[in-house]
Image (cartoon, rainbow, N blue to C red; front, side, top):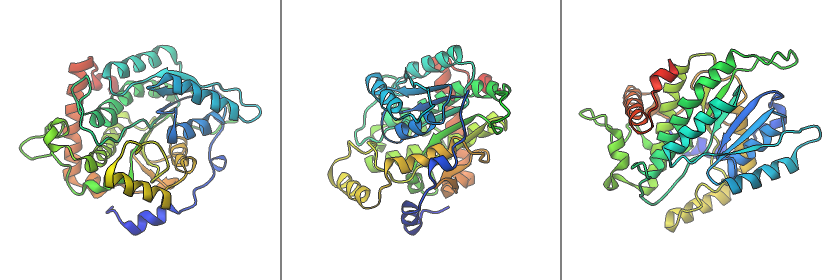
Length: 341
């Protein structure tokens, strides 16, 4: 689908259903929300906690902020809800932190029903992580997809372990990754992808190719491509989808300055969704029976960009996936093929 300003504006002002109208009872279930100390992640974690899961894990970089978020969620719990969120350290700028988190989940959790992979960054500054990758490419793509690979085996085991509560409707484990409407702005070909070289990561890591007003959109396009790959590899026992929350009030763009920062700030005031409203998309996608790899928007099934649907996009997606598998294997010893069967 091509980006349309008219469709975008209509979407921004569309009324979304209240979470109470679609969220199921989550009693006995285990939920992880990344980036849950603020913004969309916090609002999603709060809504899901209010459905009484056995365990709610706030996966955050700043554990002090995470503990404050947990206390606020408990303060707002409805009568009868006893869930107290747990705060786990997760720093996506460190691949070692991601593997530590995945190992902890595998060791400490006997089931995992919902993962909302919300954490991400939007930066105007080119900088490399300690792992040697441009920060937004690592956080939004390399680390986020590594986390998915590490958690999918537990999601699959959970699919074979029903709760045994006949009052609850059938529920497949979910992995939901948050993207952005801005992935449409990449156009018909992912920058850096060339027929003579599939090394897309070279484009993302070299300073000369860094464009502050484009990098976030590019990483969000990679998110969509990777979710398509993950959904194909994981099979139909679990649901993997990608969620567009819309243009929302959040802290994602807090570091933007200059003309772009002013423009986005003005747009946010004029048509930005309230954070809680945008987070309804996350809650919907994380609990509803969507098709494999579905693109979720406005609490329903939508369509991603032409790039994602095109043969060139699918080819780029395969190349990117193979590159990332190599990174995970050489940097942190993770064999994605072995984990995903």
